[in-house]
Image 1 (tube, one colour):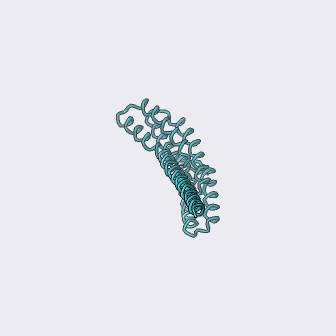
Image 2: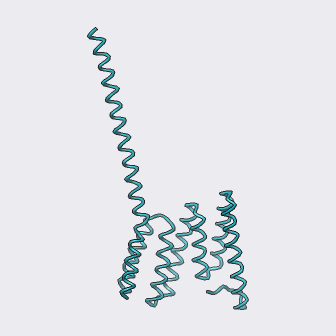
Image 3: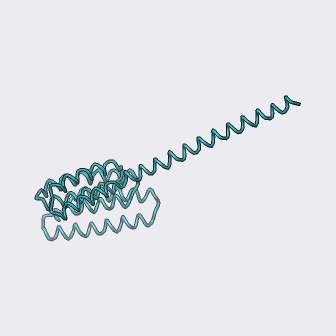
Length: 194
């Protein structure tokens, strides 16, 4: 009888220990997952805080400091691995270039950043991102890139089998085509200008 009791006690003890270990592992896995998302979320929006510092420096008319702070915002946007930050820092750099007298250089750098944002938006499957990047390129007058963005957006909308997305792309493409025609008529050259 004592053997029967000790066998039951051993089995119960082993089951209890195994359950405790499993629960502890579950807690560790869940907390790591939550902590990982918290860190990821922080890195996804860190560029915003840096851009606010850039805007503060611009409002103080400290353009040299604004450019230095912009570099930190750009680095944070790269670390975010998303298109939104890249688009925002490119737009901020264009504004800085206009204010500080390096407009052409800022547009060239913005163009590179917009391309990176386009690739990230496409990778994320973000139709909104692709269309917003297309608008940025349209503002630069990059006709070929805008057309390429529209083609990417069309493909994404068709693959998603989303009628609203297809409609958004169609409306954007029609608006862009009308803009191109208007500019061509004004210039008489067929080149798109801002």
